Image 1 (cartoon, rainbow, N blue to C red):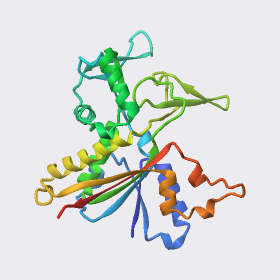
Image 2: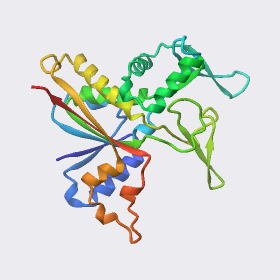
Image 3: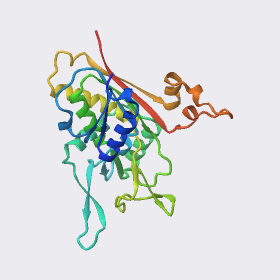
Image 4: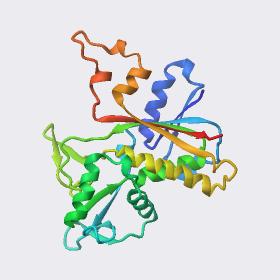
Length: 285
């Protein structure tokens, strides 16, 4: 087994290599590639060998796009940022959708199967349609680019993803809106806008795991179609599971090692706002 870490930060890449290689027996099994995982060029030639791609708290930091709809009778618009010439203030402007990634993500969003959406999401859609109110939604275009690049370079991969499905105290408006926070005098302060952030705040996005399932299937099918894999394409499908962290740990972890004296177990009792997404391909005979 070989382990490869994809790390965009040179400092963190060096730290990972130093940490793992401190155990001499791991040196021949572990390497780090310092690059952007979303860039297709970095993956090189297609590798059809089976592999696992593990992403722990990766999607919450992936780029998202903001789309806007005046009401249910109008089409979605993409949001762009404009800097006012007389000041450094950024403002949102809404334009017809031109970005191909936004177009594809909206298509998936609009065709999301009703049985896969939560009760709350269904009620929101009914509210917006019935009362003709405006909508803002954050869509995971960065996640889509990452997955399509992965499936193009490693068509037989299996995914293990863990991330936040809910974030507390989000003040930024919009569906799947991020938590924007920064430290002030040692205290974490939640912000109501991302527009004033100048690199001194943390931005975390929640993951809509039902939408992720649809995006995963779309990117898998799109990558195989682009590679003109026709012989297995009609039979190959994606099979995915969405499980809470506690359920995953009960099945795969030795949680007896993390039991505290008062009965509290962080592997089972913490991380209630996180889920695992497990995805692999299978063939119907």
